[in-house]
Image (cartoon, rainbow, N blue to C red; front, side):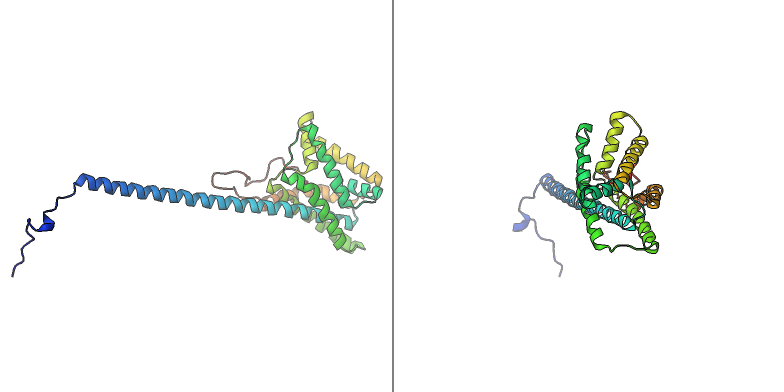
Length: 268
């Protein structure tokens, strides 16, 4: 038995056909709507991913900032315990501590705040790292001094000095790479450089010579450690700046440079 195709006068075959143009428009509208939805979803996803990446980037910078500042204070305390010579500004801090009876950490905070006030006539703008530097370094220094036992004999003091200088270089790299603003003493140098037109090298040498002489006169310690610090902190800081350099915040952002900051003054 052969089955014939449905007759044209069957009920469902007699219904009027939907115009092709209307169906095509509906199909295109559906496709366009779908593409728009996919595009919007893609943009939303990319925005979420970018926001998450920026948050992680900022978190890492903050961790680097406060870790660097805390380690800087701890390294300075190791140099104090070694008793073989301090970095220039801590010669002054130690001398003032001897004069006033305050701890060296508290003196560091007071001096940092006073130096920061000098930024006002120099029209320097502090950053989060600048203000944090004033407090965190001094607190970390006093905390470390309270925990580390007193060192006796060169067999202990020399390794303590070496560890302090090395840790100071690592702390400097961490702190500068975070890019939250210069320390108060660095800002004083750069501000004087801009206002006077003198070179950074000249201003830094003059300031550090003045604080060393003043600190030594008041009882601060200078010695082999001061010289070792002076010749090694630059190369160490440059090394650790490369180690702790941050990647860009995003593919199109250069919030933090991937290379070593140019002209960085290597001291918080």
